[in-house]
Amino acid sequence: MVEIEQKSVKSEMQIYDVFDNLVTAPTGAVIVYKLTYNDIHGVERDRYIAVLDDGDTEMVWGAGVDMVDALQSASREYGYWYSSSPERRRNPFVEILKALKCK
Image 1 (spheres, rainbow, N blue to C red):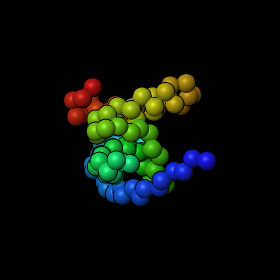
Image 2 (cartoon, one colour):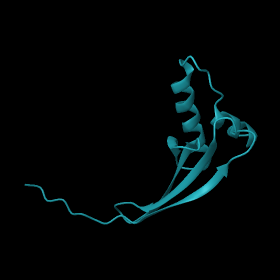
Image 3 (cartoon, rainbow, N blue to C red):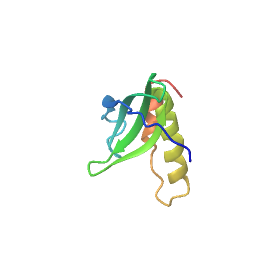
Protein backbone atom coordinates (compact mmCIF):
# COMPACT_ATOMS: atom_id res chain seq x y z
CA MET A 1 0.00 0.00 0.00
CA VAL A 2 1.29 3.43 -0.94
CA GLU A 3 0.87 6.18 1.58
CA ILE A 4 0.25 9.65 0.27
CA GLU A 5 1.22 12.58 2.39
CA GLN A 6 -1.40 15.29 2.40
CA LYS A 7 -0.24 18.85 2.34
CA SER A 8 -2.39 21.87 2.77
CA VAL A 9 -2.47 24.27 -0.15
CA LYS A 10 -2.97 27.92 0.65
CA SER A 11 -4.74 29.90 -2.02
CA GLU A 12 -6.23 33.33 -2.53
CA MET A 13 -8.34 34.61 -5.40
CA GLN A 14 -8.98 38.25 -6.17
CA ILE A 15 -10.32 40.29 -9.04
CA TYR A 16 -7.39 41.37 -11.18
CA ASP A 17 -9.22 43.44 -13.79
CA VAL A 18 -12.79 44.09 -14.98
CA PHE A 19 -13.62 45.02 -18.55
CA ASP A 20 -17.14 46.41 -18.36
CA ASN A 21 -17.44 49.02 -21.06
CA LEU A 22 -18.73 49.57 -24.58
CA VAL A 23 -16.48 46.81 -25.89
CA THR A 24 -18.22 44.09 -23.89
CA ALA A 25 -21.58 45.68 -23.07
CA PRO A 26 -23.75 43.56 -25.43
CA THR A 27 -22.43 40.27 -24.00
CA GLY A 28 -21.64 41.27 -20.42
CA ALA A 29 -18.55 42.04 -18.40
CA VAL A 30 -15.28 40.16 -18.74
CA ILE A 31 -13.59 39.65 -15.38
CA VAL A 32 -10.04 38.39 -14.92
CA TYR A 33 -9.34 36.78 -11.57
CA LYS A 34 -5.86 36.28 -10.18
CA LEU A 35 -5.45 33.05 -8.24
CA THR A 36 -2.39 32.89 -5.99
CA TYR A 37 -1.51 29.59 -4.41
CA ASN A 38 1.36 27.58 -3.00
CA ASP A 39 2.06 24.41 -4.98
CA ILE A 40 2.98 21.11 -3.36
CA HIS A 41 6.59 22.25 -3.05
CA GLY A 42 5.59 25.43 -1.25
CA VAL A 43 6.35 27.68 -4.22
CA GLU A 44 3.91 30.56 -4.64
CA ARG A 45 2.35 30.59 -8.09
CA ASP A 46 -0.13 32.82 -9.91
CA ARG A 47 -2.76 31.80 -12.43
CA TYR A 48 -5.30 34.01 -14.15
CA ILE A 49 -8.86 33.02 -14.98
CA ALA A 50 -10.99 34.86 -17.57
CA VAL A 51 -14.75 34.73 -17.09
CA LEU A 52 -17.73 36.29 -18.83
CA ASP A 53 -20.42 37.63 -16.52
CA ASP A 54 -23.72 38.14 -18.34
CA GLY A 55 -25.52 39.48 -15.28
CA ASP A 56 -26.99 36.11 -14.32
CA THR A 57 -23.98 33.80 -14.34
CA GLU A 58 -20.21 33.85 -14.55
CA MET A 59 -18.72 31.30 -16.93
CA VAL A 60 -15.03 30.48 -17.05
CA TRP A 61 -13.73 30.64 -20.63
CA GLY A 62 -9.96 30.57 -20.18
CA ALA A 63 -6.99 30.35 -17.85
CA GLY A 64 -3.31 31.17 -18.17
CA VAL A 65 -0.07 32.19 -16.54
CA ASP A 66 -0.82 35.90 -17.04
CA MET A 67 -3.79 38.07 -17.94
CA VAL A 68 -3.11 38.08 -21.69
CA ASP A 69 -2.63 34.31 -21.76
CA ALA A 70 -5.97 33.83 -19.97
CA LEU A 71 -7.74 36.20 -22.38
CA GLN A 72 -6.20 34.46 -25.41
CA SER A 73 -7.27 31.08 -24.07
CA ALA A 74 -10.78 32.41 -23.47
CA SER A 75 -10.85 33.93 -26.95
CA ARG A 76 -10.03 30.56 -28.56
CA GLU A 77 -12.55 28.65 -26.44
CA TYR A 78 -15.34 31.20 -26.95
CA GLY A 79 -14.64 31.32 -30.69
CA TYR A 80 -14.70 27.53 -30.95
CA TRP A 81 -17.93 27.28 -28.98
CA TYR A 82 -19.81 29.85 -31.06
CA SER A 83 -18.17 29.30 -34.47
CA SER A 84 -20.69 26.64 -35.47
CA SER A 85 -23.60 28.17 -33.59
CA PRO A 86 -26.49 29.63 -35.62
CA GLU A 87 -26.32 32.70 -33.41
CA ARG A 88 -23.00 34.23 -34.36
CA ARG A 89 -21.78 36.27 -31.42
CA ARG A 90 -19.12 38.91 -31.20
CA ASN A 91 -16.20 37.52 -29.22
CA PRO A 92 -15.73 39.89 -26.24
CA PHE A 93 -12.28 38.42 -25.48
CA VAL A 94 -11.03 39.30 -28.98
CA GLU A 95 -12.39 42.82 -28.56
CA ILE A 96 -10.49 43.24 -25.28
CA LEU A 97 -7.26 41.84 -26.73
CA LYS A 98 -7.58 44.29 -29.64
CA ALA A 99 -8.19 47.17 -27.22
CA LEU A 100 -5.11 46.10 -25.23
CA LYS A 101 -3.20 45.77 -28.54
CA CYS A 102 -2.31 42.15 -27.76
CA LYS A 103 -3.75 40.51 -30.85
